[in-house]
Length: 185
Image (cartoon, rainbow, N blue to C red; front, side, top):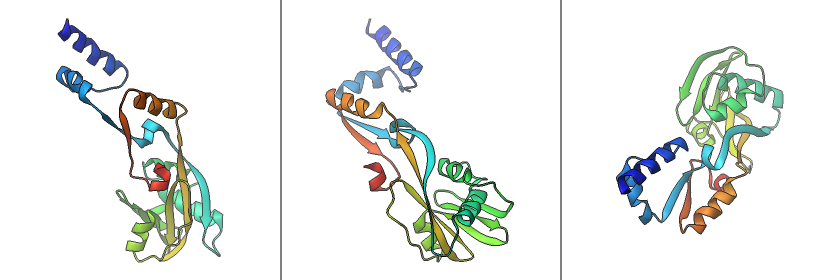
């Protein structure tokens, strides 16, 4: 009966979207005391939305959104997709995706960068980032910092109960994320 039970368990897991490497892995789960949860799409909805646009002094929010949206329009990243909704994109030349950091390109004759604030600093841009609840992206063009755009991902309504249920089973849930500590908390 045990092999049949293990087969049914792995099959049911697959129906629920849980990949179980094999019956021996399922059998060893009784020893598990910690579960690592990916944040985006597991604890959160996985759908980013813009929550703040903070232009630098002397920069219009429209210009900031237009340049950022134009550059991010060509990217597939969830953060980029949220920013791309801010304005109708204009033509971008010399577009380059710098995986994990940001994007560059020329928009309306302006050499622009959109990405992690630390990456902008590495590119020689002096950056000022406001405190924000979300993931903050810096925007610069013509070698000057122009502002930030902050995006956030909503926590699923079922996540708090799921974490409580895991703890009730004696498991210690750990959140895995590339986001800042404030976003993770």
